Image (tube, rainbow, N blue to C red; front, side, top):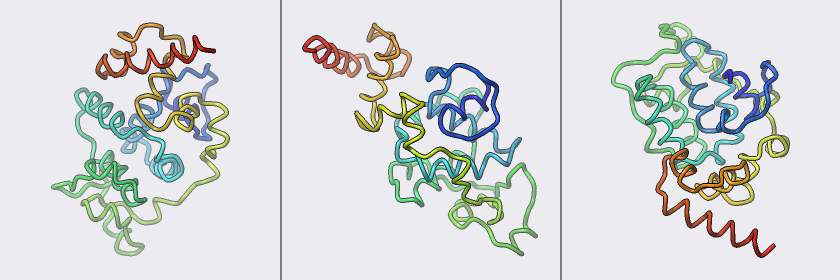
Length: 213
């Protein structure tokens, strides 16, 4: 599935090829991280992803976000822009992402471009400047019209919707996978990369409720 389709499935108003919604292929945390890794090749994604973070960031599962990042960086390496995104969420008051805010030893510029003159004339994004990531202030404009509201995203994305029902946690993810058709807790455990006992308990709870009717 293309990145554009993934982002469309998680609430971006973005031109994307028509593909069937599949949360397995457009997982929320993975889609956001893939977009973050694309900042250097497509700087226009930065304000969109940051706007999404301000609107929907509290519904990210922090542990899953960092677990997914650890898997991706084994292939793609570290990205300072993940730290930048965590800094955004932290600046919004979400302390779950504080541990992801890491100051870069060397100055980081969007797309590797030195923008000192723009920053001198227009200023820099302050919460990024604090971690040595230098982005001109005007590069980030809140683009609310290009991101779905929670009410609209709930209607199209069951993974997102379940986080309102069951909480922004692993239980929600496990139940989403059960509803999607995973019938074996071992497979869910492997797919989510979490311990089997945790999955088994949620699986048992879900089966009990279903059988009670």
